[in-house]
Image (cartoon, rainbow, N blue to C red):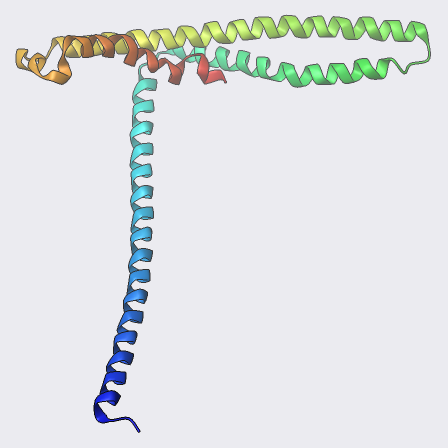
Length: 196
């Protein structure tokens, strides 16, 4: 039989084991909460980033809000659509060309060959014209937006107080970089990349 001291020792060991289990469960719960909080934080950050990007895009597009700019966008979009539709159409022409070889009559086969050759030439010309138009129209729009953004950035810099130029982040090199490189990167929102 166990003495009273041994019984109390076993009892305290079982209580300590229960506490250890509780701490493991608490640890798991805490890790779950941390993961959940981390996911919520990432969602909030992503939402904020998307909102900032959306606001930036709206501000850039506001620079191209004249009627002639809408004309460039419309015709550039049409040209881009035509350029994109040419490749599937070429597949159709190839299929028709292959089936042409199974026509038993030689004269009919020759007529089909001439027809599909002319269609292919027309497709090539359509692709050349549409790709050139798309690039030129949307490139022109991108250059206009870049010019306007560069002018407004320069005007904003020139309105600053003298002390503003003494800050390290407003050094001459940083300002020149902002005018030359950073503004040009905005062209990706409105330039040729728009039609892709």
